[in-house]
Every structure is written in C-alpha cells, then in structure tokens.
Length: 71
Image (tube, rainbow, N blue to C red; front, side):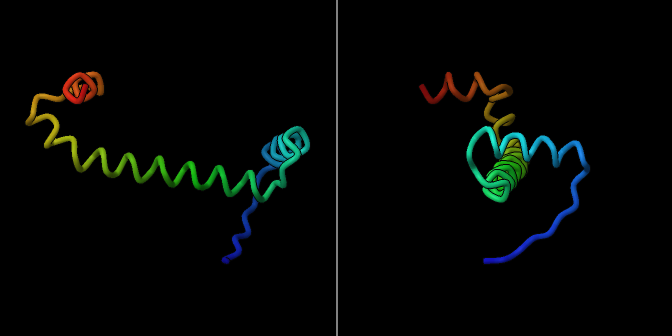
C-alpha cells in the first residue's frame, strides 16, 4: 500500500475533522473515498469524451436518448 501526504487548508481540515467525528470514520478513510470518487469521475469524463462522436453519429445527443434506446 502506498502513502500520500497532502497539505490542506484550515477550513478543509476542520470540515474533514467534523465529518470524521460525525460519521465515526477515520479521516484517512474519508479521504480515500473522496479520491476514489474523483478518479472514477475523471475516468467517466474521459470515456464519455471518447465516445461522444460515436453517440452523436448514432443520433444520441442527450443521456435521455441513450436511455430511451436501451429501454
């Protein structure tokens, strides 16, 4: 397992501390969860960007178009 050290501003540190106490979870667990979420969003956006030309060519311009076609 790797280690990551980051600096955060005081406001973010207070918010993280408050959430850790409120949820009963360690700050490191909350930070890992937030990082995982952000990485998943970045992967999704990258994939979506690559697929958009194909979707547009198929006439899918909105998420609703995709879901209507798949349903």
